[in-house]
Length: 448
Ligand code: GLU
Image (cartoon, rainbow, N blue to C red; front, side, top):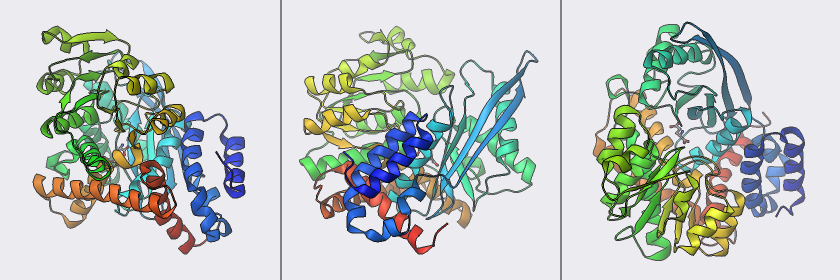
């Protein structure tokens, strides 16, 4: 509940201005709620207008993306880039191509990215972008033409020292390749302007695996520190079957867990013997198929229509890796009823506030997205370093850096939570630790 006068005033203003952006309001409310003890202790934040500046993007770019489909018909989509906060580094964050994308969704993602990027300890500000373009069912050539049209405008606003986009939902190696090519053609400049690039043109080893692996490193460390426990022998429910879910499954299995589910926007599969990841990879990475195919190929596996049913599958650990608000109150109750003790988030904001309240009431170990899924952008930061050095590190070296960053996020979060009387609260701790660094930089740089 918001009780601090300053925080209440800032939130009221956001509500007045952005009342039509529910996801953005949700993300802001959660953060402001946990920052109340911090602003109470540090009057300099109010004196410098830190919160009212933090909730207002430095720049929002919204543009038309016109392209021609395979049938020769003109298509028009909307493109966005929200350059939210550059206090600690150039804007950094992914691009999402999905029909649900609008300004409010990109703003919530950009706002989360500010604190997430700060937690990685690397010098990256917060940004996010994307389009309501739906790549589902589009040919390669259509995706390429769309990416070229999108980058033609975006190229005016980004640069290796200004803003460095990457992938998010539906933006993977193929899209980053097309986007990079078009940037290079327009600017006649070969720079690390995007991350998640192919290994042949400046990409980093372990970037593909980073979000999913990082999620498991974070979860393993939180389990070790808070519960003296591990993944060994645990049953894990994972939603999604994209890049984050696939590599979370791979690492959880490697750490001794049994992952029993995978899902997409149509439904989920349950495999009581444990998900065969090579089949999921073949379906999703091999030919961009639907997860239903898994149950057709694997004897003993079941397919169920509708994705929220995945949360009724009994498990010890749940790793939501699909999309925002995929776990509501009823799903959280179902998880708890069936024995789930840990929820760590691979997707951005996958739990509604009501779901988080259920985790808290029942004493679950809850690892919030901006900490638990920071591994992706962390290795993006390492990709930027390698591009600047003009060299590349081995997989082992990069993976070891990722692991140590995820472990330090757990430590940083717990230390911040303790300092502000919220001992053991990974959500409050992540918000506070992420915020303090950005806030101090904003104060030091003056009123901008
Ligand atoms: N889209 C990812 C995220 O939500 C990664 C962003 C990046 O690598 O810049 O953090």
